[in-house]
Image (tube, rainbow, N blue to C red; front, side, top):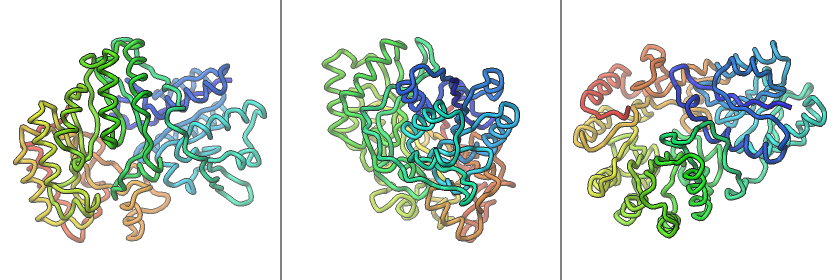
Length: 427
């Protein structure tokens, strides 16, 4: 049996082709461990699907890429006559919107549901509703009751996950790695906590074992940690540094990873410097303290942001951040404070991107937009395009704007032009 994982992406996004996302790689590794005689491939190139001709196709998609994912699924069904399964953030947020091109959707953590689905498909040669109803973590079509959503399985203990399947060669730069799933916070624009549930971490021992593996197999020199919040557990960071020191890994590689600015302190930055961090990234979102607390919670503050930037300068660690404009409730004064914050830190802060606050399914801002009739279920998902600093397909004339009752979109555009004139953008 041949199983193919396809990574849906925007036309201008080449990263999945160079290095596949670790979610699909982890599921592929889990299925391979459970069903070792299955042939598995991962691709981001549509024509690979039709040249290799898999028996089962699994597509991973976020909302912004969903229209393309659906077109590919329709073509695979028509030309190859195979079942197509959908996974990723989009279907996990709106499982009730499972389209007819897909036999089933995998909700949230996909390892266990996908392995069970593959096993039953091998046994039966098809995937009828009476089989799918017994697999936790799926949504599927029932001829009588429409889309059925099964309960999710219990979360997988992190250290039982196999190392993900990768498409890289020895000496690859900026190797992706994860050491956790989920996030400790519930920011209004983010779907991570709804998708993954409670924050779960690899132990320090597992993390360092994975580093050894990356060094031995790929001669890894630069690691990009994909955790939503790598610095969530300070004790784990110190244990990782201790193990790396004892096992000869300190100084062998550099790291890039995420923090929330409230966790930025001297002790954490000293440990990060010793570990080898080249860049620490955080979601700044805004320079307005009032708006920041509305977006993230009372724990967030612009003072924390500034401390994070200052600590980076002191310890010689690069700091980069992303910002959001057009957030519900944002005023001209908030925009002015954001611009002033960026201007004040010009040359000290790299900008990951400027994002128009977008109601992604699975977030409170989606619920906000749905209640006001700004979005619908279903809708043209291409409209939910985020980054107007980097994404060529973004357009102010077609974007979905949530804050028209407070600030005209043209004013946001003017502030964006002002900010980008002084910002140091990450290439």
